[in-house]
Image (tube, rainbow, N blue to C red; front, side, top):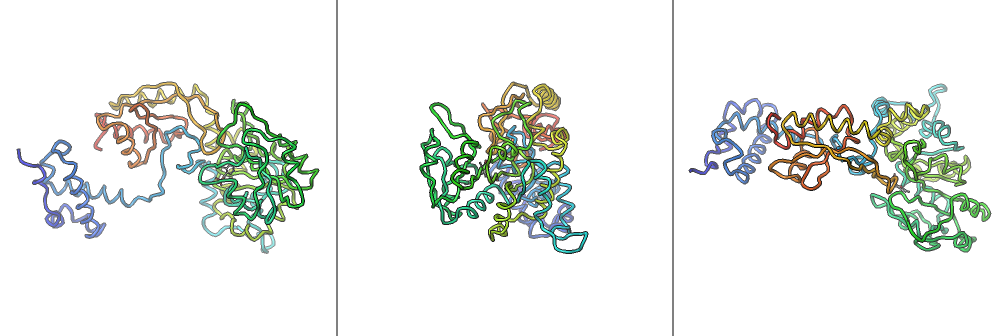
Length: 467
Ligand SMILES: *Cc1c(COP(=O)(O)O)cnc(C)c1O
């Protein structure tokens, strides 16, 4: 049998063929040439004669189709939207919280000229910080608030404002690293403070704090354990007790609360994270949190505290370097506005809807997805499983779900998962025991049809259409 590779026509011959004319017109000769070279190189390495019918190898029309697809794929933005079928709600690598529709609409609205720093009533100067402040005050009970780029920036600003050149007292049990290289000791040093560690990894007592406080103390920092838990022989000073110690010594207490929870999720069986209001009520002078974790908004850092302290934070020149842009502020304000009606918030903010989705609802969706996949010839079954909150929030909380397990076909699970990631739309799934695993929790209902089509095509199911 002759080598099918010999049937591949030279690139120059293809370029001169009428079948390629329209493509060259649209994309230019250079790019089409590069695409044809790439396609042929892949053919030569992949080709064992079985994947592609040999007569196609001589057909310029077939190359035109492949080249067009290649060019279209290559022209896609690298930061493109993804269907998250992993079940990890706050998936840091997938951009943490998906925005509520009201939030992205607000960001689009603000993307032209917008009333960012103008008082439309008087025509005079306004402040970008005002857009979210009233809502934050209403929703958290804080006297004042400031928004920056992310929670890391909020901690930097708090430490730098309150404790530059001074000591920051932190329990050794809270010298943590939280996703994306946020390390408490390094953040404190880079913010101009000097770390003063107290207590031990598993146990810190009131006396440990008291002994460390003195004229060199700038602040006490409490850091919420957002991504791990300590169990066993442990002791820590409660935040109300710590607030009392701080008050008696006349030093500010900064509480890095982390996740920005605004709604009590205990009725849904999700415990262990304080709401922003609770964190303030426990007596911290400044509470910091993220906008894109449990709050479910855009990437942002939020500082809450007294008017006097927030004025100092705002007056720090660093706040100019850490300020958020108008798209963030618009999306955050719209997200916060949804919280004014908690039931609406739960419906409209995807993170809250995903976290509080009922096990029965998830089972129904998994059944429906599995049936749709089987209908397209894929082998799919459902099984009980767990979703993760992810993204540095609610460590140890496991959410019961129903998973769809899919036979990946001949290519195997890893190769098929890669194919799904590179597809249109991009789909990210879990892989377990050589099965593709889809968790409906993080798949939005409007994405289900695309998901089924993509998975069926990727596993090469019969009737799934060309891949
Ligand atoms: C997530 C987290 C941070 C970092 O927040 P970013 O918004 O990602 O910068 C800092 N501290 C705590 C306690 C966190 O949970």
